[in-house]
Image 1: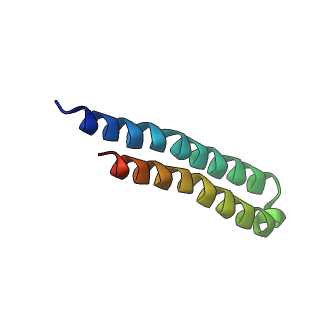
Image 2: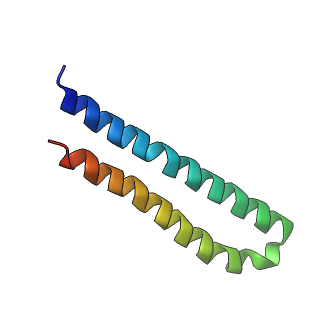
Image 3: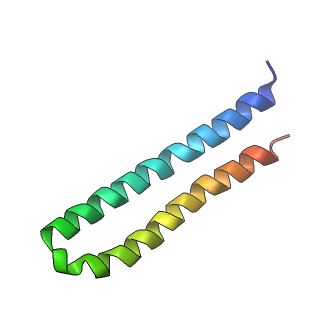
Length: 70
């Protein structure tokens, strides 16, 4: 088995786990906050989306690194 295939699989696999967990926690905490204070939904939504986008960027960087492994 070629080690570059293993390296690519590990890079994207490990690089996607933590952003996926982070996005799940962000969504859960945002829903919890909206549940406690429904009037604040508008103030919670925008920061939640921004932080989710930053977490997703980490997974995209991992994908780019996986593709750049030769």
